[in-house]
Length: 71
Image (cartoon, rainbow, N blue to C red; front, side, top):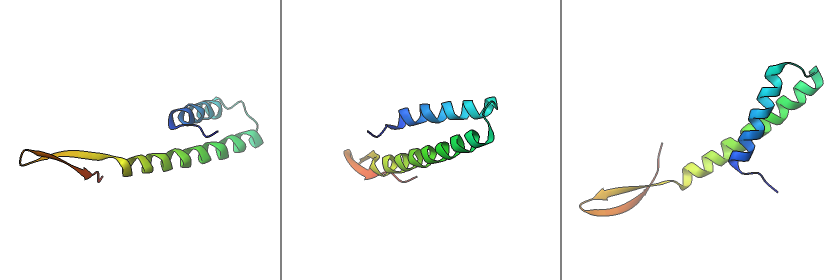
């Protein structure tokens, strides 16, 4: 089952914490780093997809209409 954004961010924060402690050997550090990169890319993809779905309500001449959000 795929994890949602918040769950993935929690896992990423744990990985960062483990790496910052410096208690892991080189192989484990590299493995954790690779896992973190994969999670980071997945979170970035989720954010990009969410951004595409965001709409803004705009008041035009007393009427409310939807426009696609553009960053």
